[in-house]
Length: 256
Image (tube, rainbow, N blue to C red; front, side, top):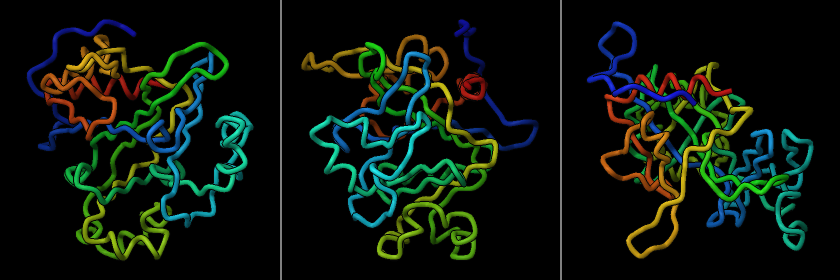
């Protein structure tokens, strides 16, 4: 990646009054939710594997869902886990067919502030599958935001029309309970699941000396340092400072 010049003072989308926002959000299976990291291959291609469905509602399982490399997701788990995990339902969110994301939890509540023209960038934990790459965090996709908000604010007509493929909306046992606090984000057709993962982390240490994933120095030149909160291991959404928004958006949109 090319070196980046000093950050500009402000960033705006186009010539209008909307100040563009860029947010980084961790998604996908990990050792705490699912027990593995997704596979990344020697050519930087990867599989985006969702977390388990805690409600056991979804018909999509690790055993019946074929990945982009021609193997069902269950094959990436340890041999002793495969029989069990093959029957496990998946929580497919974000989904990259109609580009929706939903979350009812407090740490994600601020995502309702996103609006048309903003960028929601997804990163995930991956580990080398056919190569010796150690665990790291990689950008795996992004939404060019079309609309976002609480389900109650968007209204039932909009939610049904735009978010019917989202996990939290498609299951009648989930949506009524979460509706009042469910934040939904819809991406435009320009959104994408990347073909090639882009590493954004390097090893760091917390105050106790435990190894953690932190935003790499190279990527801090792109996204900033989130006011010094560079640990991105299991963090709430990271909002890019306005001074870095233009470069961050340009960089992310250049990924293939």
